[in-house]
Length: 139
Image (cartoon, rainbow, N blue to C red; front, side):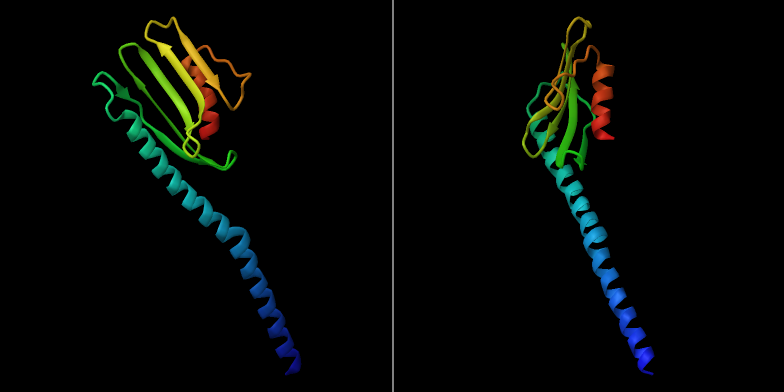
């Protein structure tokens, strides 16, 4: 009987330890990541709405994306627009409002401007190069 009681106590201690490990290393990180995804979506959506409020009618807004980046540990959003002169597209840190990547191209294809504060050696000469770089951040 004493042996059974000792075994039950050992099993209870093991289960308690496993529960604590699960809570600490699985549940809490998932809860944090989920709450950050929600916060990032809300911050990004608000920022995008502010950007496009009051813009002229000839501006066509691109679909926006919102993301919690584990690698950068911040909230990002990607948006842009087309107008009569060209296209602008950017990725912004929603917590600091810093532009991380920017692209501008005129309609005639004569002018392209790109820059990144994430990698200052990065240079692009086309929208597709910009999109490839931005997609790496968002995937």
